[in-house]
Image (cartoon, rainbow, N blue to C red; front, side, top):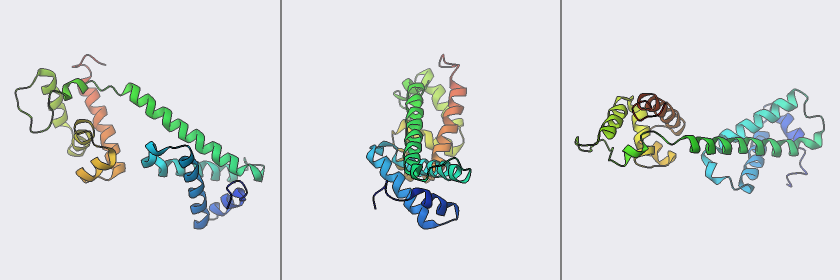
Length: 186
C-alpha cells in the first residue's frame, strides 16, 4: 500500500467511527514519517506524538477543516512534522535552560552513601535531594546523578516511565526552588 495513494480521509473517517484497523493504519503511517525523519532520539515519545497527530487530524475531519479528501495524507505528514519539530525545539530549549544550579556539586559525590565531609554546596544539594519525596528523589538520582536513560531509570527504580518523567520534573522544580538562591541563581 503506497502512503499517498491510500484514501487517508476515508481512514480518518473510519477512525472517527471507532475502527481499530483505521487506528493501526494511521499509527503505522505516522510511525513511517518519524522513521524517515530519523527521529529515533525521541523514540520514547513517539506514542505521544502519534496521539497528538491523530487527534489533530481527527478533529480537523470532524470539524470539516479538511475540505479536499486528497489532502489528508499531506495534512497528516505536515501535522506530524510540526508536532515533531515542536518537541525537538522544546528539548533543545530545555537543554539550553537545563543547566541545573547543582550540577557542579554533583561532581563532589552525591550518591546517597557519600561521606559527610563534603563541600558546603554539595551538602546543601544532598540536603535538598534528601528532602524530596521518595519517588522524586529516586528519579533525580537515577537520571542526573547516575546518568541513566529514562527507560533505564524506570527499570531500576520500578517507577513506570511516564510517572518517572513526572516525578523527575517535579523533583527538579523543587530543587530549583530550594537551591536557586543558595547557588546564586533565581
